[in-house]
Length: 67
Image (cartoon, rainbow, N blue to C red; front, side, top):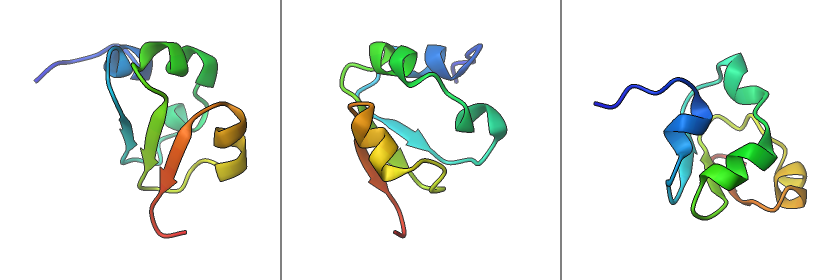
């Protein structure tokens, strides 16, 4: 188990980010900073907390579950 200070530290060097919670700190991420942390800008959103168009505009490959 690796403990991280924040979402950006957890995403550092990752190939894909999976959102599994609706916590407020994940709703208000800096997508520019997040994009720099990931090796490729891909997000799977299992809680549907982001808008598909906004994610595409931010340059992410965005997969949401249940929409």
